Length: 464
Image 1 (cartoon, helix red, strand yellow):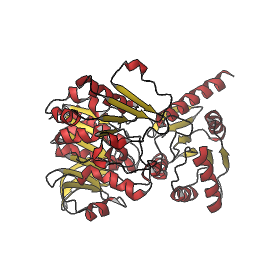
Image 2: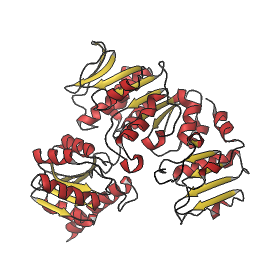
Image 3: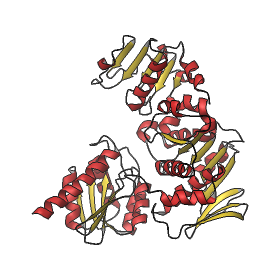
Image 4: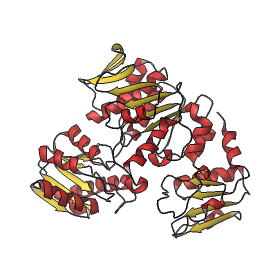
């Protein structure tokens, strides 16, 4: 544990904090706590950014469209995750680019379990944290799941295990990997930020790229892309491969709702999840295997792992059961921003009669979703946003549209459509396969508004 390392990287430097959202504010407060009078610059696109309340005479603020110009004038560029360099029209000296994630991993990598993947990283991170906590371990959950790394440093001890959910945005410019790394899956996502799927994959691979052979990697052997990437980069690690088939060396294998941990075919441990339904769907068995593999490596006992798994209740916005209203079951899967996640939710629930699709359009391909819904029909589809409009037209060009279809921006009308067309005993699923920021701040806001509108509509109908 070496917090002084981070301070040494900051001391005496000309610094710009690029982006002043949650992590940017956290970075500012951390620097000011240790260096109250060094000159600092905050740069953010938002013209509405307000920093007067900071009352900081040593702070310079740059706002507006040209906020990202002149970055090479600084010694350190603290990039927050949401900032993209796509529109910068000059070469930035990449060795100057850093972040909370990069400095935290350089200082504390021996204590970090890093989890990434296009989907499932929040559930897997939270499950690892929950199992460790249940087993009495000193652990903190941080990163992309909501808590900036600089905010937890003062809570840490030399024995603290930090479970870090890591996005591709956070991993893009890191120069150190965590000692314990989990790579769940790779699908097309965030192409508006990374420009190509290949660039996105390389960013994700940074979770293990800077490990050495003694450090630990858990990865999905069934994924279409991950095994090839591991092989092409010659990443020989102490590792566990998880999936549905046995592997060479240590592996976790799930068949018939039983998870086996084995080495070269010899089963060392087994977990029977026949009656386990807290995390529904085949995709969650992958998350469970990954979490178990990490906890086993950290010497958590079989019984403590089983106890933690049984008491874990899942996360909001991830196939979250909203409730039964007028005999209809409503589910909120607002975190679904790619077609693979929507397909996984449909497979997990099985009785979906009304599906809500669409949102912000990032140019993702949806052909696999159209094919799945053609072969496994859902009779009522509510499309929303630019992505929904494109889905509707592309679907219609390939297959007949379902029985009842609308394209609607107003979620009140979408909820009304769902109540009108969904029979009792069946399900309504919000699993948009698209980002939320065409009309919502984030997927959490989209899910919260969806849930509130269901309750509001039901109360209105009940009192009429």
